[in-house]
Picture 1 (tube, one colour):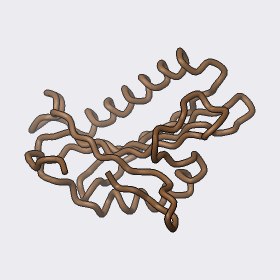
Picture 2 (spheres, one colour):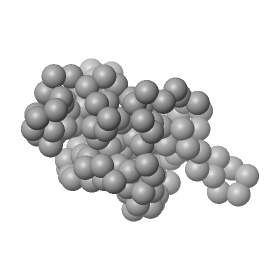
Picture 3 (cartoon, helix red, strand yellow):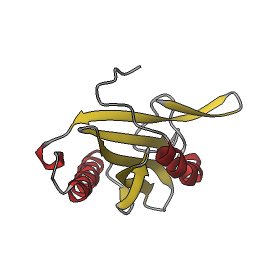
Length: 154
């Protein structure tokens, strides 16, 4: 996890998760297509979850685009959850990459403190802060090497 601060105030964090690579992400597979499917599954899962748990809000997916995570080819996507009048109450950006036989996910989440569907969970950005950070986030994620899959989390 990486914390982002402005002065002494922590704005939010960027998380790194790892998952076993399934068969479609093994050697010789069409990894780019498999990562795109994962990204679409991610968006579909959140669309269904927010439709059930956050009625009255509108989820707008971000495009699934090519990206880089630590120099490894990756996929970037996310979504914005808004009130019917267009006020962002949640924003999520996620990068997915296959490295060293492991599926890596780098994500940042943002929630409004009041009037949203979900409450912030600790060090979460506001949707506006995350949106402002996104161009820098793309650069930071692209330049930060991923650990080896067998490295123990710290």
